[in-house]
Length: 133
Image (cartoon, helix red, strand yellow):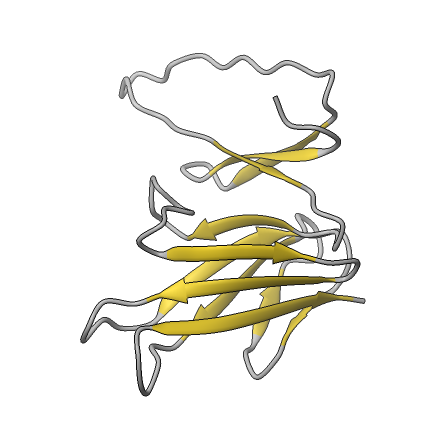
């Protein structure tokens, strides 16, 4: 159970629903017999971090090392394998999201945003600092 508001995101349909902690969710299994959802809390920063776009383990420890939240900032440490290309992160916020030195694309209607994170020049990790306005 998630405390407070959370986002229920359907990556296959690119749809989402804001849920309160007392709500329940049910879904029918599609004809393909396969679906998945991502549930993410809306943090103090106003951001629900949905992780690595297109991945079933969107916030797995081999990609997302840490997630730290403050009043208006979400810090995410993103891990890369040697020779790996850019990673697309996604999230939700009703507020405008910016990221230090990275471009944020945010849909005004759905409030979904993406950030393309280039691989590090040195090392295996990139720190991403997202802020809300």
